[in-house]
Length: 477
Image (cartoon, rainbow, N blue to C red; front, side):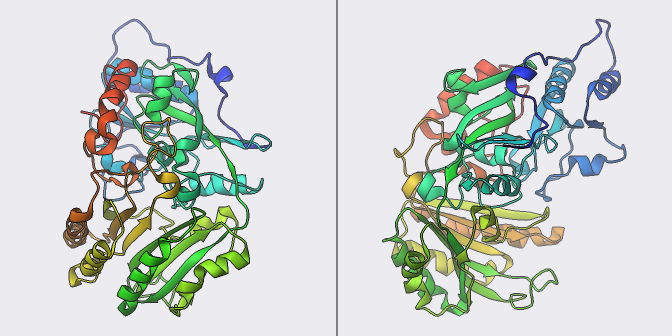
């Protein structure tokens, strides 16, 4: 069944090439005007109407100042933009939503290529395969595939771009049962640094196929094909207690996860809701300790699994039967772009000592500037060795700590940054050297992201883009 597709198939796009250019020299401004004329989408230059909207990322703390912004309408626009950038000696940085905008670095010599309009979704229900354009969000894909009784492995936030988050790993509610989202990628359609359309899978350009799955993409991905998964009965939601119950609840959760089947993914978190009108009355200005869970089981089994936590008599209990499409509502991620700062640490194990350390820092007065401090349970399908094939197919650790705060005005950044950094520092004695790419909001080292595979990734990147035309998050330098 085809839901919507504005993207060409690889065969249709094979004839798409570089934008034509006259032989005579032209000034940079004339190049941009030629680019504007050749696009089906839109070009924005500094100072023009719409410039500030076009360059804005979801992560509002990042003030993107590129040389130009192209809002691509199709894969041909992507190829045309790459060709123009090469002609001008510029880079191209693809971006759908901009959740990870901080990891790109300065864009002064770069054309920012927005891919939000590449939002086609085509579903082969019989084969359980979805072809997903680079502008599709997690919420849109979840809704589309749920109509066929399937789910895609993706992150927890509904607003993230599927392509970007999946290429970065993809850690979500199905992680323990189905692994990282990158492992579900069957193929990619892309434009290379020469402006050529390429199809990449296990048989075509296998080195690049390995590199893009959780690693680095020295091409601009316009669409991916994903393996979908049939999900049976599902129960999900949150249990919440007043913050003064934090120690009892957190340690009960730690003991609870030790016996869980891989069909359960959960996290424990400290939540401090600001006193703002957007927050419901019963939560506004209050602080909680919470356990969130997604349980793939029938009602009786889910109830049995949850009973040890319910015995702690939560003030709020929202766990209920739901479809996979509703999972994106469980974590409560912001529905609109927001300024936020966060830090993440992978724990080698979740022990009484590491939990005490997390509680100590989470309950300090300085942490009151943070909205959330969470500990996600890993293992199961994310365990190293369970799945292979991509540059990053697992996470070497038992849990992921993520501390984040909103920055409603510039003066609030210091307190939020200091608090998040303090959480990360306190957890270092229990930390793995692993860094999870989608949670690294600023450029970090290739060694921490990819370990011994960093050098192989450098070779693949150089083979496909020796001049570094395509700007990627967390560059390999």
